[in-house]
View 1 (cartoon, chains in turn green, orange):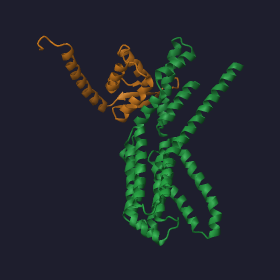
View 2 (cartoon, chains in turn yellow, cyan):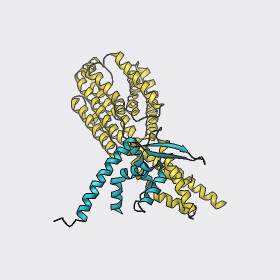
View 3 (tube, chains in turn orange, green):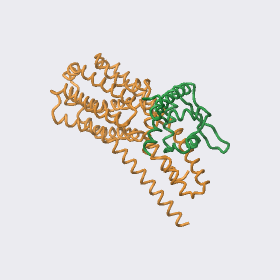
View 4 (cartoon, chains in turn cyan, yellow):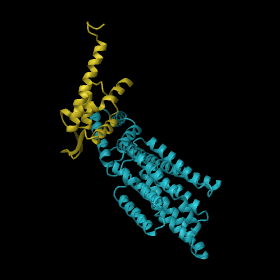
Length: 317
Length: 113
């Protein structure tokens, strides 16, 4: 395959954002078509360069093809809807049914989340896995909170180690997910500002006291409702085909759910905390696309360098 | 040629199903056949054929199968399913009704007021 074809197909691959199981078939088919076309054009008397240019022109814009492929494959089945919204529903039920104070239920839920995430991660990273992946950050957050309870000297010693490690782990997951699709990173991180918001509402000092327990009891229906709102968002996200509609849905729902948190916890959250939470929410929507852009720029630079070195070696020859 | 493109957009499913009704074909063959049978009238960006084929396949109207050629290259052949044939029969009837209605307006008979 010529370098121009590789670039063309890579652009489509990057824009179509297919699942690992679907991608090879779609790309092989396009490649076979382009090879047939190139052969026909060269046999008709065109030079290789002319044939490549004509072939790419007749294939059409990579953006258009990638968008059409994305819209063909993006809609998930109802089974996927159920799987993707399940972690939010389970967390919602935990609070609505007031089961959150049973350590056994929380342990079972966290183990289920870890097991499902590991299974999905090693089985082609299907779309539904990313809503589960977001909750795997909970054990990491829990470790951070537990460190606060250590004797004073130990907390000071362990927290400087914990923060870089936790951030590195979070960053690794965001990078891996963004390589698949930056929208999945936003989807994965969506519960984060909501969880932080509720946590600060029940325990502003970061430590869980008897008063915090009472506040969770008071706020439990609203905490449950916010998770159910997330579940509905994910369900709609999975069924939508158009990318711009998915982006709009996540942004609208994220900001509305955060407003719900702030509204019901208004006596506990001050203005600066509210602004901080809004900043975290905007980070959820802006950091992944910026990372994605960075990856694209790197890829294009690599292509340019490859082209320059190929031109250089041709001239030398 | 926007009008041509619009015609093709609205009728691409019927056209693809009609071609595959005759025999199983692969993508490049479909492009050539469509161009030949329409005497060059239907020309479109060839890359957009595949999303259209995959949409039909996801709807269960056609099915695709990879075949290895003697030269080692692979091709995906599409064939129409029973569901696709039923859908095509329905669309053909609708097209016939539409064409008859258009003809009655464009070429009014002597009895028309």
